[in-house]
Image 1: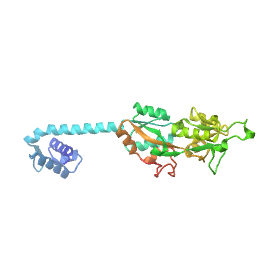
Image 2: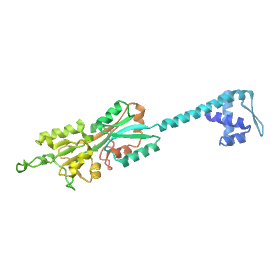
Image 3: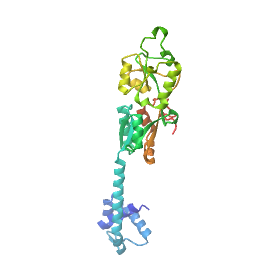
Image 4: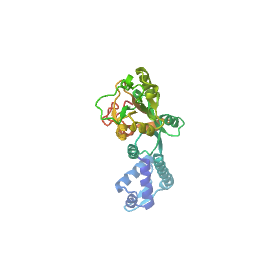
Length: 305
């Protein structure tokens, strides 16, 4: 028996003195009101109402139970209100600063459809980790090694020289003897990829191939790195989605396959679960997971869970 629904029917019928009027006020069929009150009486083992063909009059027991029934209804309504407020409470989430405004807007809209009021805070990888650690945000899309990530985004090099049909090998960036005094082509690492599991692999490859230290540079900001590439023959380490956004020609790296990995970091388990309940593709598109699912083992580009 639904105790709250039964008490609603009881209070409405007793207040109107009629099953017909009480059921109409409660917006339920008269037969439903009658069944609910009968179930309530059976539960207590005592009649609540004396019925006639036209009226419903409280019994002494019914008069004694009416205040408690009203309190139960008020408590249920207060609980519904609190639940609505809790659903509307913003879930502040730190997201990569590389996420575009349209995918983020779609993520917020998708969250609303799932009962989540998302408040997104773009930040770099170290700042996201710190915000999650200090619980200034309730969750963060944390940068992790690609093989440990829920989402995986392949990285390659992009420049203004395309289109390209083959990978680029970093060994081709070594200067020839005739060009030793010329400017070396540089690889720009954006702040989002200035993390050990990406940066250090590229630096080790640079050193093993005999490239100069200045040929792998970490940009202070994404705009700075992109500007350097647009104005030269330099290369930007980025995802295919970013290359398309900046009008650059992307290609994979021949000697290694760097990739971004992301997972959900949250101070409270329930906050992480609420984010994981969202369609994976919504978050994946913000991160730049390829539409063909090449970023992971699922249609949305997930790389495990």
